[in-house]
Image 1 (cartoon, rainbow, N blue to C red):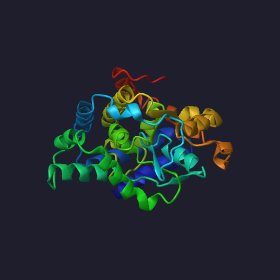
Image 2 (cartoon, rainbow, N blue to C red):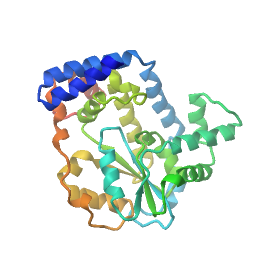
Image 3 (cartoon, rainbow, N blue to C red):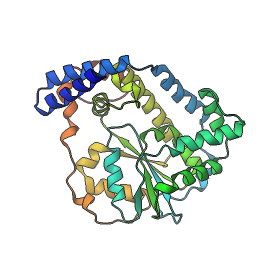
Length: 309
């Protein structure tokens, strides 16, 4: 593991120096060393997506009475979930939203997944449950109870503002449940060029999280499953999820932030984050490694994912 950390550090240094070939050599070595330490099967993550889609095939009846998008919510501590993959701009959007006077940043909360597990275990009257049964039972629980459980867990981090952000990326798995449990919540989904976000994940040491990110073929399969699930949520929850492109945000921050605030039901405010120039150097960083990423690009293309050059 010490060698892995050294390789990752050298990859960063060589990239900063513009020596991209050397950077990739160390990045690839570091990723391989870390992958050897992990017990991980990407098939399980891919299968989980299929289980979720099977469990939530339709639009929930409650969505017919959901408050119109863009309307302010009077409830104290109304959540705004920022979801997607890591390295897609989630932290940037959290900073933009939390600069608003009505929004408190709660950072990354594990509370929704933990609340879901607790509610399912109580409904099944058991202390342990297999993944397949957990997903199946999650579609038949008391969703109002799940919403209350989440808000109670999140309360210590949400202060006393009318809205708070939860930027746990993996909450993308639970969009259907979030929509049912918290009908007034907002879900903002960050998107980014497929190779940019995959490269960003590949070069990041997540310790115990995102074990898919240390082998490009596995990362590709995970990305394809993620896109499949988000397409399903959009099809079954029309209008409930606001896609926000990192590239569009950098190119047109004023316009994209206005649309974001409108979706979240927040009035416009002039804040330092609105006028600040957004970091754009990472937009094309992955292109220095186009040759090394070619197999991943072909894998995504074969799955029907558009990957413009």
